[in-house]
Structure formats: structure tokens, C-alpha cells
Image 1 (cartoon, rainbow, N blue to C red):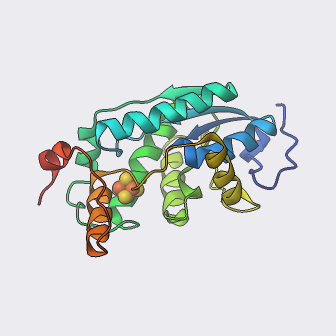
Image 2: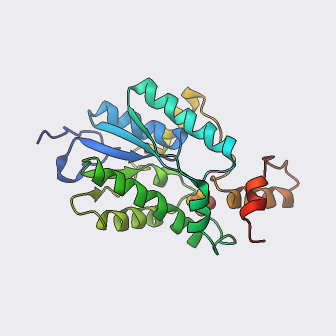
Length: 222
Ligand code: SF4
């Protein structure tokens, strides 16, 4: 098998030295720097967009379309793994009041990593990874636990638990985001994170993030 000559410490040595990677992406701002580093190193990346957690629908479309556009710009394959958001709400049922980095986020990561691992197994990818852990708002350990657990269900598929923040990865993420003029997200993605961000803002007399909350009314247990 052909190996990648990886001299860039900001990207991982892929397990087994493989040169193709299925990369779950949460959004263009998180993926931008990672993607450019991987492409520069000659890794054949396929992006996998599976994020039924992002609400409301127009927020989801905006994040997806931005990621799709950047993938096209770099000539990177993009898999649109759209899904009924009701499945996500079912996966986090009972965890609506959890804080960010709590049990709801573990369930959210698990769902997205299980989908990615399944796609990897059925489409001949030996290794998958996710951009989720590059955000300083996320618990990297929580993200990697979800990826490693998802890989276990698929013999022959490995999860790459890389810390994308190191070796200048965080800085590169910011630089690429600014250069590309990516949309500045105001909350993690789900309507519960929108609710909590707005509560935080309200306590500080800051302007609220205004979104269509129909889905919140439909699924919230409050
Ligand atoms: S806060 Fe973010 S990671 Fe946590 S459940 Fe919501 S969308 Fe998922």
C-alpha cells in the first residue's frame, strides 16, 4: 500500500500508513485548516457531513452549504449524509437539560461517529476521523471516546483520535476561517445550545440570537 510522506506535525500519521481518510466534518470553520493541511500532505480526503444536531433548518443549510462550497474549492469529495432530525432528538431524549460537554454531547458525538464508522465500513475506508475536537469548546476526550467506540463495531475500520489543535492547528483554523470569510457561528448547533447561549446572553443584557424556534417547541420537554 502506498504511504503518505507526512512531515507536517499538524496532521496525524494515519493508522497503517494509509493515504485515504473519511473525515467527518461539523462545519467549514472547524474543518478549513485541517482540510488544507491534509490536502497539502497528499492525503485523499472524503468529507462526510452528518450533523442532524444542527437546528433550525436554515442554520443547518447554511453550515452545510458553506462546507460543501469549500470542499469543491479544494477538489475534495463531499458526502451529504442528511438525516431526519427527529432521530437526533430521539438519541438525546431525556438529556435536554444537560450542559454543554455533558451527557447530551456524548450522545450527540456517538450518533455522528456511529454514522461515520458505518459509512467507512460500507465504502472501503480503513480510517475515519472527525473535525469536532479542534474546537476549544468541545471536550476532546469525549469526542475521541465516541470515535473509538464507534470503530469497535466495525472490524477493519480504525478511528484516528488526533489532537488537531496542536502544532499550530488552532491558529491555522482561525486563519483559514478569516481568509475564507466563513460564517461566524454563535452557538454549538442544537436548539438546546441555542437556548443556553441565549440564557447566558440575557443575564448579561446582550442581544439574543434570533432563530425560528418551531422545532424547539415541537421537541422540547420543558
Ligand atoms: S451542545 Fe453541541 S455537541 Fe452538545 S448536544 Fe448540542 S450540538 Fe451536540
